[in-house]
Length: 171
Length: 130
Image (cartoon, rainbow over all chains, first blue to last red; front, side):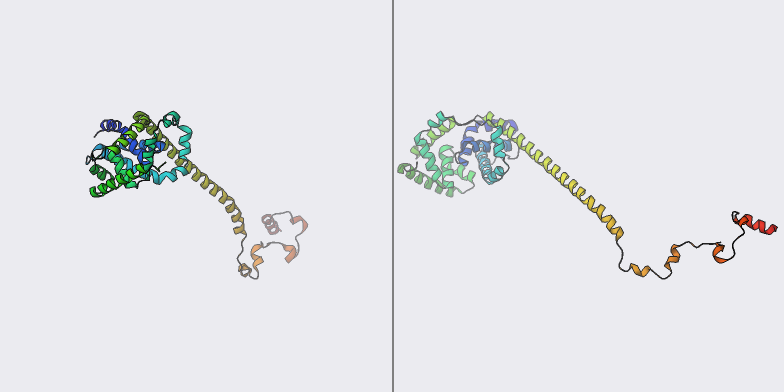
């Protein structure tokens, strides 16, 4: 796959990639964008190479997930280097639009809170299946776990999520 | 997988909401390029700074050591061995003085006054003539 194809694939998958990046960063938009920037640079510079063993989407999600873990490990170092401060000084980060924030429905907030309360594997599988429309098998491949294990996480996650949503004690 | 329409509907609603606040691809890519360039610049600047600090440190060390060396040189020159006195052998002063030859005032009768200003060669010639 050449650079032009890769770029067009990234563009095609941008919205779902951002959603997955946001999920990996626990719904922090700024971090998700930073993460995605790093992923795009890695992919376009050839540091992350697509080997054709899975779909581009599964592969890209894997790169995002691995990079998110590295980000979490490096966070303290980056704070130490004042990169964050530097970035804040230079970047014209768009501040969240208050009007748009108001439009977030209560139901969606409840769902976010419920998903966040689930164990990591469970909310990862649920996000990949319900939000990203991957199959459980694809999710298992992406997360590097067996299909049986993914199914177990999926079923338990669904059960817990329903309990949380019906309980109504999330917010 | 299609048995959960309630959950699928929940997530679809969430996805629609998230789509509205997703930054554009071009925007993210431009920022990525900008950030990459900036990080490279920061690394280069950090490397230059480290080299400069190392150079200054080395220069300061060299500079601080030089006066010490200057002070140490005279001290070494002044040093005397504890056994130095053994070299002061009897009669050693003879080696430091120049012997006087032809001083007759000390050893014999003095020359007549007319020969005092004459060189030894001429004096020898004068004596042979007489």
